[in-house]
Length: 287
Image 1 (cartoon, one colour):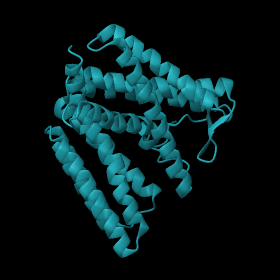
Image 2 (cartoon, one colour):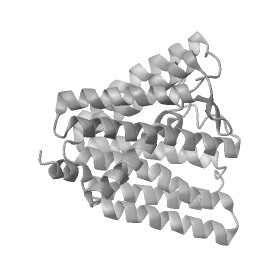
Image 3 (tube, helix red, strand yellow):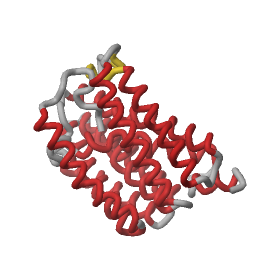
């Protein structure tokens, strides 16, 4: 989620209260399906991807491109089924195949919004694929909790530290309310999460937990900035209004998208495998 009013004035007390209440209601549901795992978690990830695609469609002004929306939906559904069956390489192949189809379609038809739907397939689809793949892998429940904890800690501390300290802007042309103090506060919170997880869980050296948390925090903030850049490009304030106090689902999970997708790809590169890279890294450590 974006850092909201960070560095750019205090939100009204009623708005902040609404955000807290929404988070308290959503968090137990998210944690419940995470604990269940399997097809229940895959269904939750699929719902998230579907809403992300819908919000992406609105942002890039492609609501009238019915055929492109249908193709995008079919592509994402195929990707998520493949991921749920453990066929991550196939899911990634489908992602880029459908994205390429829509990019070419957009070029041939001259409809830029169709091409943008290709990028939306990657954004919405890979979010779901990464979440499913993390949950199905070795120590899947722990890894997803770690991912959630890092992203949530980064977001919350970035918001409050940025509001309290302010200072130089992180990237004013893209997101004028975000500050370096908030970004560093979020990173510090993530490092503490990494240290806590290392102390509680073990499995790999403490240093790897901390470094991983730091990398995921940076990726989370990159995902936040990416969504801000997209909305600024299209002149949109919020991705939607489905979550009271938070806007759309994309506004809530932009950091999770960045951390989940990029984190999974980095783990895959380090492990030399797209299938359960986290488990492969743990095995390489001899734990």
